[in-house]
Length: 316
Image (cartoon, rainbow, N blue to C red):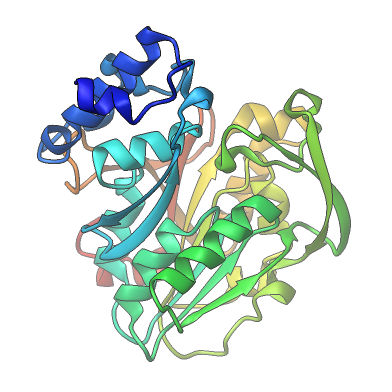
C-alpha cells in the first residue's frame, strides 16, 4: 500500500488515496468475477455517485478489453470509465449479446449515439472487412475518444458521422455533461453547464439506406430524442432485413411535448413487433425478451423486429 501511495499526489486526502488504492488492488479480482463486478466496485468506492475521483492524479487509463478484443482509453473521473476500467468489460453487455446473435461478416451496424465507440468496436469485429459500421455522434468530446479508439485499434471498416440525428435537418444546441460522456442531449438541460451547437440530420440522410443487400442492425441511444430520430428514418423503417434496438425514456419524450406511444405506432405501422429487453445479471448471458404493445414506465431498451422476419431470429 505504501508503494502505491508513493505514486499518488502527496496533497491527496488519505481517505481518497486509500479508496483509489483499494480499487486498484481489487481490479484483478473484479475482472475475474462472473457477475457483480460493477456492483462490488461501487461498494469499494468506484460507483456512479462516488465523489472524489476528479482528484485522481492519474485518471487516464489505457487497457485491453478482451471481450471486445480492443484497446480502450478510460477516464476514471467519468463513472462510465471507472466501471469499464475496474470491471474490465463495458457495462452494457445486453446489446453486445444481441449483436453477437445478429451480426455476421458483411453485415451493417448503425450506431446512433455512438458515444466513445464501444458498440462500434464490437460491431467492427463482428462484420469484418466486408461489413460496414456507421458511428453517428455529435458530441466533440465523445468524438475525440471515439476516433482515438479507432486509431488505437487500426479500425478501417467504420464510417464516422459527426452529427446529431432528428426529424429534420438543421442545427441544435447539444448540452454536454463534462462528468459523463454518455449523457450529452439535445433536450434543454441547463444543469450540465456546457453546450455546443451541432448539425442535425435525418437518419435517412446521415446514413443513406442501402437498397437490399446485407442484414442491418440499427441501435438508437439519444437521451430522449429517440422519437425524433425514428421520425427521420422512414427509409430505414421500410427496409427489410433490418432490426432496431432503441433506448426509450418515456418521461423525457413527454418532456418534449410528445407521446411515447407515437414511437410504438411508427414501428407497428412499419410491420415491427416490439420486445422489452431485460438484462441478465450474468455477464454475456441471454437477456429476457418480453413482447410489448406500449412504451411506458422507466427507461428501458427495446428490440424491434419485423413480424414477417421473426422466424430467422430463433433466439427471440
